Length: 112
Length: 115
Image 1 (cartoon, one colour):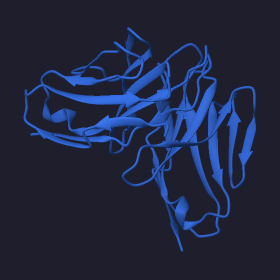
Image 2 (cartoon, helix red, strand yellow; image 1 turned 30 degrees about the vertical axis):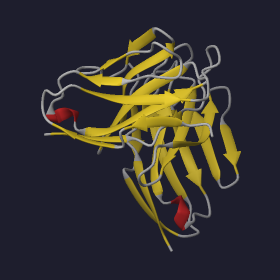
Image 3 (tube, helix red, strand yellow; image 1 turned 120 degrees about the vertical axis):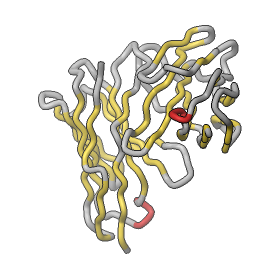
């Protein structure tokens, strides 16, 4: 079955710097790759997603890139702010299945 | 307000005492799923349901049961809880339009401790 590996497990950056979180997946048939942000005491919330027919997607300070050949995708956060501090999860799934496989999570700390 | 509601928020129980964690969504979503979150392991899928009366195992279904008798509710049942089921549990739902995977809406979580 699908396996998703996420790195790093923790990441600390200065406010204003960029942060990059990387994920690799094992199933080449996977075609949907969402990213979720989990704030303390809350459930995860979708922040951006990408489908396999697209190589890059941006939403303000957040971008996701997908390399299907290498089977990896990355989350890029620019101009980080203290409110970006949270746990981030990547995930992968494929059409016609109900399975969404998550990575292990990355704790991002943005220092003021 | 569109939401996924889980109850209870916190639960402490003892080994072997059956319990149910309820999950309800008010968005008329076809798809619902349960996850458990453990440090260093991320979110692992327990069971999911693509529609009423349709349920399937996720990656860690052992020790759990679910039912989907109506669209809005998807309870998680632990018939004989054990300490290794101590975890943070999340219910989620999604429109799941046809074959396309869509955004998941998560509940606020249930912190379960089995003594």
